[in-house]
Image 1 (cartoon, one colour):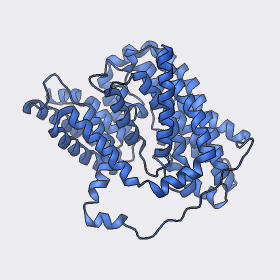
Image 2 (cartoon, one colour):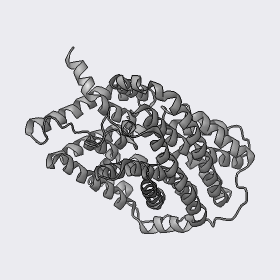
Image 3 (tube, one colour):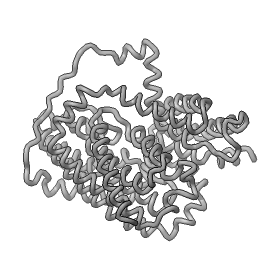
Image 4 (cartoon, rainbow, N blue to C red):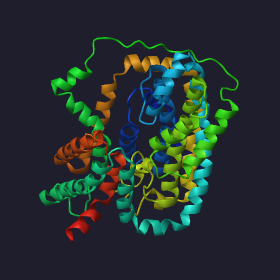
Length: 446
C-alpha cells in the first residue's frame, strides 16, 4: 500500500464525516438508503475500492453517532438504529440531561468502535481459513440466510412466503431485459435491483403522497418547537458502569454478527438497562450502551464479511455494504473486494476510516451538534434529501440498462416497499436477490 493511497483514504474519510454528519442529523434517514447508492456510485465511478471502503466505514461511524442526536434532542429517530433509543431519550430530555448524554454517547461510540475493531479482526482471522469452503456453498447459504432472517423478522410467515415470489420477480425482469435486447445475454443485472430494494420504502412513501388521503395525513400547519441544549464541558462523562456496559455489550454483539443490528441493540441494550432501578440512570445507561452497540454491530458485520468470508452474511454487509460484493463489472460474488485485496489492505482501510471518523465526529458531536441540528432542522427539507437519493438510483438504473430499467426498478421499489411495510426486512429481500438464480433453478427442475 502506497503513501498516496493512504492520503486518499484520509481525505475520503474526512469528506465522509462532513457529509454524513449532516445527513445523520436529518430525522428519518434510513442507513441503507443513504449509504449504499453513494458507495455504489463511487465504485462504478472508478474510485479506488480501498479508498471507497475507508470512505464507507467513516460514513457508517459518523452516521451511527449523529443519528442519535436528533433522537436525544427532538425525540425523532435519526435512523433505524436510533429508533430503540426514543423512549429513553424522552426520559433524559424530561430530566434536562440531554446535553450531558450527547457527550456520553460520543464516548460510548469510541468504545464501541475500538472494541469491535479489535475483536472483529480476531474473529476474521479465525474464520479466514474456512472462507473458500464457505464461499463454495454461497447459494445454499443465501437461501438459508433468507429463511433465518425470515424467522427473526416481525412477519415470519409472510417473509418465508415472499422468498420464492421475490426470486421469480428478479429473474423475470432479467429475462425480460435479455429477450428485448436491453442488455446482452452475458450481462446479469444486479446493481439496479439492489438499489430498487434499498430505496423501496422511501419510493413508496413519496408515491403514496400522490394520493390525497395519504397527503392529508402528513400535512401540518403547526410548527414543532424544539429546545436545543448547550453542550457543557465534562472531564469524565461516562461512569465506570457505563464504560464497562458499553465495552462488554459490544464484545458480545461481535460474536453474533449474523443477527440483526436493531435486534441486538434492543435485546442487549434493554437487558443491561433493566438492572438500574432509577429511571434516569436506567435511561442513560441504556442509551450509551445502545450507541456503542450501533457502532459495534456495524463494524463487526462488515469487517468479518469483507475481510474473512467474501460473501455478505451479516445484515450490514447484505444491505449498506452490498456494493463491495455486487457491483458489476467491478465486483461480483466469487470476485468481491475480499478476493481483490489482501487482509492487511482491507483492515488498513477499516482502521483509517474508523479512526478518522472517531476523531472528527467526536469533535462535531460535542462542540457543534446544537448549531448543526438547528441548521438541519430549519434549513434542510427531509423530502429533498429523499428525492436526491431516489434520483441517484434512477440515474444509475438508466446507466445500467437504459430506460426500461427505470421502470423495472420502479416495479421492484413498489413491491419491495410494500413488503417492507408489512414486515419483510431488507435482509430477506437482499438474500432472495442473491439466491434468485439458484432458487428458480431448483423449483423449475421439480
